[in-house]
Length: 154
Image 1 (tube, rainbow, N blue to C red):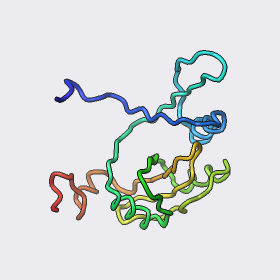
Image 2: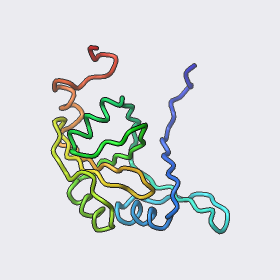
Image 3: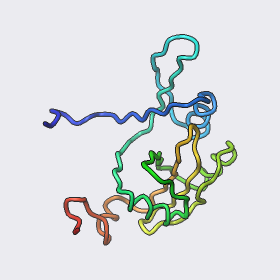
Image 4: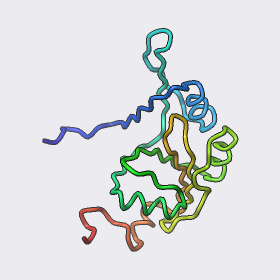
């Protein structure tokens, strides 16, 4: 059964024991805009931070290991949840993350799919990849290896 309209928003919910630090990083260091959100008093805290666009990337374990190898990043066994944020400049984002005190898991690298990726251990335990697109989606779709799953040979 299909919904009459596709969802309009992706909301990623990250539980954290260090709310202040996570909020400072995502809002103040990365510059995400905070929008009003409902919470009660005391320790009931929430912040909704706006990112201009969101996608859901489904990947097999093989693909995850391939990306880890391309980025020279450590692989983690078992299902993982990662955040990837498109930025204008990966180097600047990585520097900001390091200055904030995050551990670099993989320094910036130019990938075969024409992005510059860097990965840090983000607040609340999630791996956070910064990626900078070096070509448009239209340019990318013209290159070998870029297609949809329905059109990919198996």
